[in-house]
Amino acid sequence: MRKSGAVRIGIVLLLAIIAAGVFAVVGRADDPNIVSLGSSAKPAFIDPNGFVLWSASWQDNDNRTFTHARVEITIPAGWTLDSSDPSGCTRTGTLVQCEKGTLHFGDVVSQSVRLHSDGDTGDQPILGSLIVYEGPGNPGRANRIPADPTSTRVLTPTEHQNQAGDCSSGDTFGTTAGAGNSETTATGPATNALCTPITIIERPRNNPSEFCLQGVTCVNDIVTTDAAQVPTAPIQLMIIFRQTTSHDLIFTSSVGQFEVLACTDPNASPDACWTDRRFRQQSATWFVNWSGVDPTWTG
Image (cartoon, rainbow, N blue to C red; front, side, top):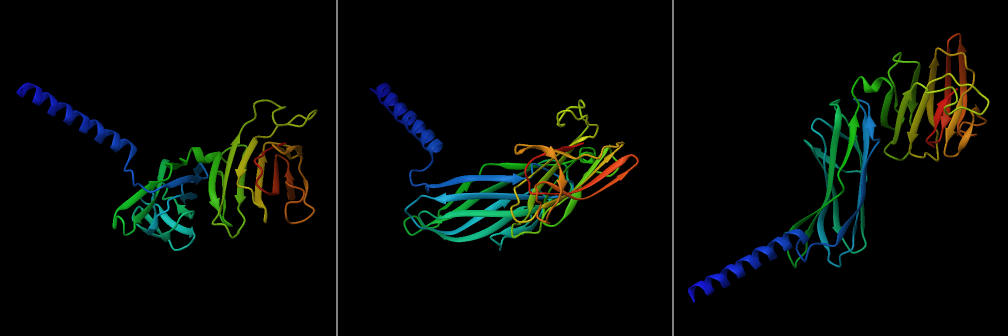
């Protein structure tokens, strides 16, 4: 009898342990029904002293009211908070906090912050969560709803020679001058948005027909730029090709392939178009207005 009683006790304990494990996996039954709608850190790589735009959003699908909601963002050590949308976020060390007040059913919480790198290179993680507190039914219990992890890569000085990335708000950035046969700078428009993520990649061409018009022999490097679409004001590029006598600038993207023409107005029409160009014995410099479609440039 003692043996069977011990067996019964052992079975009960085992079932309790299993139930506790299942409960730990699925979470509490009264956890809030708030879902992450997505998160991002753009651009994917930035200059050693560049800016990145982090954004995330959540939706409240719970019938309860949640109080003292806030977004918490953990940023790399040494980074700083430049600006936020909605505004009012504050930073203490590596923690950025953005107060959101009370949440009700159907509310969508969105937050964007422009962050400034301190120059430490490599992958830099940025983690965000929505924190809410329950109401009278379970007062004081905090709930954390994490956004998907994000990161951006800070370029090393060697990588930065022919790559550049920044989240520009009227700022100019670019690849290292004199590092190769091409040099590109970009100036993002000053808009109501926090900034415009832009990247630049330069590389030598593999053959004379790569990204080139049919029947044309191309000799210049291939420059690839990528950015968010900017509908109101153009991104301004300056592209320098060295060791060349080419007088053509060729645009290739998902919208088509064509020779870039002179602008007819200041708002990148046609898109893309050049506002100025200068040719010397062994170089060509192009000043381009561009709306953000992801092209390659060559000639």
